[in-house]
Structures are given as structure tokens and as C-alpha cells.
Image (cartoon, rainbow, N blue to C red):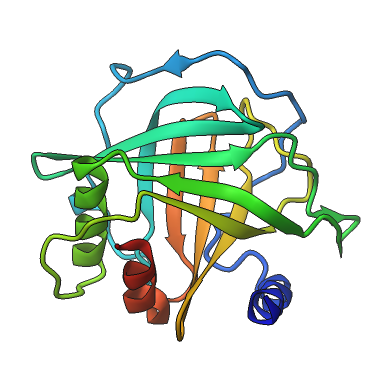
Length: 210
């Protein structure tokens, strides 16, 4: 826990790095309906995603939204060649501003984000991510469910309708640690998995796999 707290303190020193910051949005309440946009537009081809100043940032289309147990869950998909990739990303409801008048407040969000595998499609997502990172690997299996502590990088309360909230999750296991930005763009229906530091790539894949 000391290690995680230390990482969170460092996160505010590096606030905004590679997090695609945008203007804050107005506050609104999340919906309780199940919304599906699976046929709205073609899925993102992550094979076509290029490095951005050395960072590999992966966008995923939100295709379904549900509400359960104080979380809003988003099923996200993308394509890698002809393979469909999938993951469920859940975000806590009612997340307040992480910064108030430039001062950290509500900055430590325990159990703030959850990753859940849907099976082979999620395994393919992890394998495709490893390939984008240029890590030599065979087919990988993603852990079924992981709950992450977050750094809340937002200057306003989360707008679940059209906001662009940003978080940094912390992963730890054994001697390995990693960080990853998880950024939401609800207006565009996209969730981004953005690198914090390319040096975390091997640890990140190791900590996400079974």
C-alpha cells in the first residue's frame, strides 16, 4: 500500500502527461439504461494506430453501457486485422473532482476502475496489445477481473454523458509495478488505454495476463 500511495503522489507531479487533456465538461448524472451502439459505426482498427512521440495509445469503441452496483460498465471493442477484440471497463458512479482550485482533493479513488474479460476476445485484445508494444509473446490469456486503484486527474466532477474524464490506474504484483492512463470520451464513445511510460510495457502485460 505504501508503494501505491507513493505512486499516486508522483502521479500529481506528472499530472497530464500523455493523458490527452481536454476542456472540462458540465456535470451530469449517469444513465441507468442499457444502451447499445454496436452497429453505429465501424470499429477502430488498432493495427492502424501509430506511435505518438514514442507512446502507444489504444482507442476502443464503446458499444454497450450498463449500470450495476454503483458502477457504469462499458463494453468496448476494436479490431485487429479480422479479429474482434473486447473488454468490459467499469467506472465508479458519482466521481467528484480530483482537483479543486488546482489543489488535489478526492485524488485517491479506491476500486475506481474494473477490467473484466469476456473470454477469447479479451485474450486477443491482450495479445494484440503485446504485439503493438513489440513484446514477443504467444497467445495470452487475460485475467478474468481486476479492480484498480486510480489517481483522479479531473478538475470537475465526472460528466458521464459527454465528458472526457481521465484516470491513472496502478498495477502491482510481486516485484513488478505498472501504470496506465484510462481516459474516457463519452461524446465520441471511446475509451483510451494510454501509456504512462513505455518502460512499463513488459510489466503491464505480465500484470494483466493470467
